[in-house]
Image 1 (cartoon, rainbow, N blue to C red):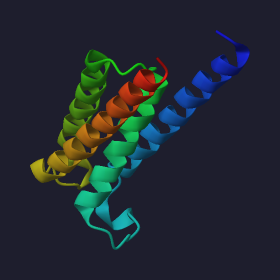
Image 2: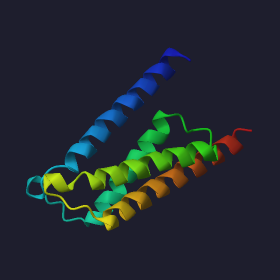
Image 3: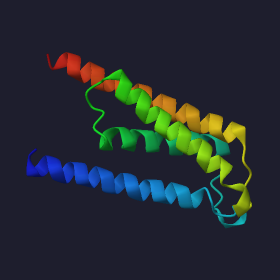
Length: 126
């Protein structure tokens, strides 16, 4: 692995870790402490978990277009989303299945985009 490639992978893991920590913090703040975005809560969930899935896919190297890697990445984010929802009530937040559905929609959408893009790039490089 080249030094540039090592730096790139390290930077991806750093960005992923910072984003995931920010997401964990934001989802466990009391509702009164959250900024008003004037965007639907479900769109926020969809976007946040889509970005999380995209970053995780890049960090673990899911650029080869293999379906099992895509499914595992998506399953990890779906599991985290469920745990995230279940741990919110002690912080004055609600555990809402519809929030998890939005998380899941974002994760599945990002997984499909990354997987299809990787397959197309792999096919065009042949």
